Length: 130
Image (cartoon, rainbow, N blue to C red; front, top):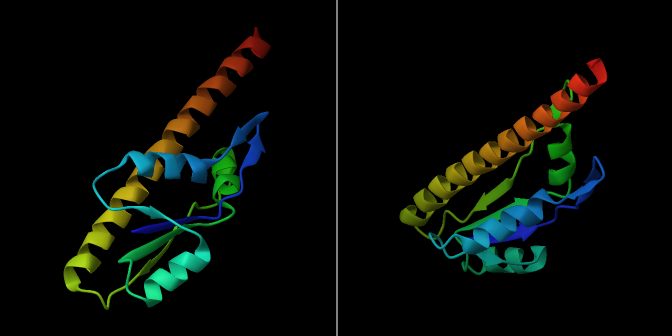
């Protein structure tokens, strides 16, 4: 499984938010699959030469979209997946399961960040009302 991180960190409420970097850091500790962290060109080469079952690309606006979670119309945080179906069916199934679990983990992390931010906002609001 190859991972390409194109995410550009953003400033959010005075702090740097780098969701792509955080995701890569977590995946490096995940030993369930053989993760490879590569450049876009290496990912393309690896797919064409059947080295990877899947390439997961974290887009450049991943962190930026995460900051919209409190907006009226939040922007989706979509990962891009490219599977190499030509390798074998087992590899394809493994890739699908990995993608599903990765998306679930991202949703949980964003929900946690959202809840933390909301509680901080409510605390500030409560002080203002006092």
